[in-house]
Image 1 (tube, rainbow, N blue to C red):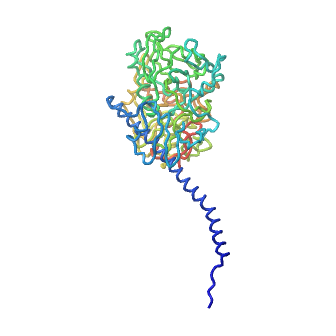
Image 2 (image 1 turned 180 degrees about the vertical axis):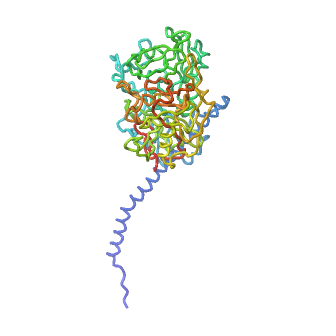
Image 3 (image 1 turned 45 degrees about the vertical axis):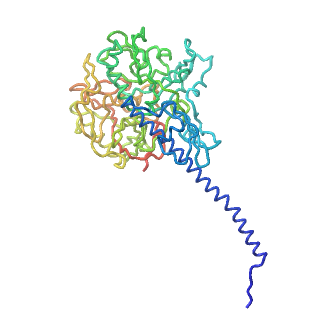
Length: 571
């Protein structure tokens, strides 16, 4: 029986086929390996970046508790410093810069590639350029002051103009039509840029919205000590400042605020993190009908005399009233330059800065969330999604307020001291029960329902209302809380446009909305559409603005946290 083997030609054919397969498969395999190496490198770079940020944030908290604590997150930070913070593994830091508050440069060698930190927190690899923020591909990215200075022309008389006495100072002047590109979304708040200092590399910002309405003080401040103890200073530098994310706090620069009499505004100054706009700044910008005029009542920082404080009224005119009036509060801060990650500076597309949240645990106070609504009463429009804004956070929930009003008005109840049996709790309970328990915190929470008197000549601290409480799953805004002013623009005038009206639920259902605080035995505190906190009779019919609590472990699938692009919850 004969044995027959492979011929030479057959062996050559097999070898050739195997060689072809190898030629095809090898690049694919190598490419898979390389992609895995790149992915691992990017992940390692991101972990190192997050690790440094977390370490520095923790270190800053330790320093605030003990000023003798020796920080290593300083401007002298170098690659060797990082190894004291986190385990670098096989990665190598080749370059790092820290400006005292944030990383401005970070270059990492990992898995045979170089990863360079971009302004939005992502990393460019090797020779790649940093991309424009993907959420807004047409927006700018980079140094904010440089971006804004592109608007300057030495011929400008409106828009961005140069100060005549200090060539390093540039400020905005004109109407919203003439100054329509200085809106900034930063730290959960809408801001307008007031001034740029190119020498100090800082920007002066004013809150676009009145965040609350309170008595400013028990009397006019005639010295910086009296101002330090004023209710409005406590609100700005205690309540408001402490509500901000630590990364924002660290970027706020102490500033000298003018709080003197209006004829000599700098006769009294106070150095603070947060303050009020002075009269000269308002006038310099154009005053009435300027971009700073929001057609609401709000406080300025100056005095008219020893008993009255200056304010802007709903016509944009400067007036003066004593401290027994309750007007809106607009925070003013000065910040070091920041990196812009999107937007074009308009009302509906603010310049944006900062990282997006991934869930309700790391969301910032002030950011917006879309929450599904199952009711058929059109409370939240045809999309059945209610836009909420974060008021505060605690250990197991986040407190949110509807960005608007319910679709029907309601009377308050039989007495000015609210209980869950009051008439107004009928629409509140209906509303909250149409928010799924998958999203909603279902236990009772504390609401402050103390008096905020409306008696001639009487001024009271907003903290005093905490003397009386109510436990409930839902309620109304409380005096002195974040977003307890006309921040939603109950607009009955076409000239009021400090927020995008398309994002407000039922903005014209009422000219005022109820709070949880009484003004007297027969009246309740309300927020009017022109920004003034007043009092209304119990039997009056007003707008209802629900406050609820959400769980603090909900995941976001999309959105940027702005009014125009709220975070979307995972189903």
